[in-house]
Amino acid sequence: MSEAFPPLEPAELPADAIEVGRIADAWGIKGWFRVLPYSATPEALFSSKRWYLQPAEKGAKTFSGTLKLAIKEAKDHSDSVVACAHDVPDRSAAEALRGARIFVPRSSFPTAAGDEYYWVDLIGLAVHNREGLVLGQVRDLMSTGPQTVLVIAYEHEGKALERMIPFVAAYVDAVDLPGRRITVDWQPDY
Image (cartoon, rainbow, N blue to C red; front, side):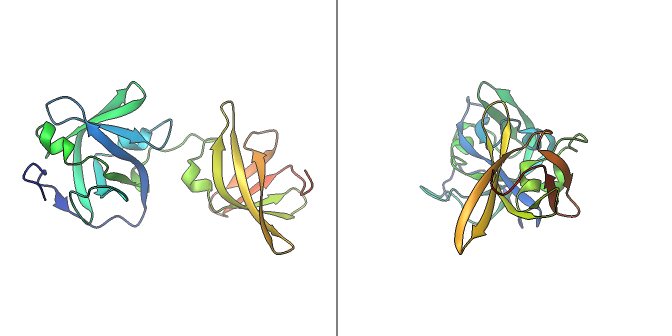
């Protein structure tokens, strides 16, 4: 490890940890760093005061394992997020974190409103139509600007295929997170 590397506490990654972004670079001279969030609305970064870091998958690695970072402040700045932490006193220490992957416990996410869902909670849910026919399983979600689209994986005649269903009230009848199921007004030949 470099001498500038901040003295962060080794930690176990929580079982409910979700990767929410990565540290891009130092920001200013007082230990702040710029974060590239994976979500357009990064509330999880703002609500959690404990971030867990793992080294970048590619490039230089300044640390190994999982480290816990105690966040003092995180805020919006232009098209990214900037943050500062208790054990990152200066620019050199912030630069040492460049590329680190940020994980936040799912339990520290703010509560979603009644008709809102975190994408991470929808991935893996079974999708059924009103007639009870299984259309597949949510593999991913895609933002198309005005709406979000469910990317549904399914098999037909031994081939892995996907279908896309707009995640809007006109097509989505119900989301049952405990039952791991989404009911839609959609037919398999659409």
